[in-house]
Length: 107
Image (cartoon, rainbow, N blue to C red; front, side):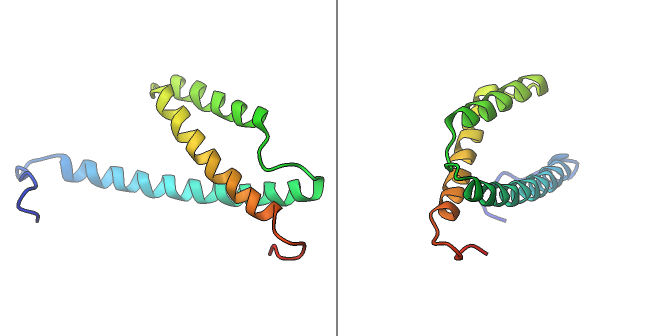
């Protein structure tokens, strides 16, 4: 244990809560990995249909959905918007790598 970390009391509920948070983080990572695989599928479709990686109207639609869902769940919609925009930028770049690869280079 790091000497600068606060010492938990023997009856602290923090270890159990931390385990729940860690388990939730694992589920979130699995969901993000699934989303990444779906983005790969979208990139293949966009390649065939000659669509760009970035479609601004779709970016705004996804961000609006994230804000709406966050509000419904009692989560700060600004946080959801910021997280989703960061995530979308990453996934747009992922699509763009597929779209700009030479023909036959994509697996």
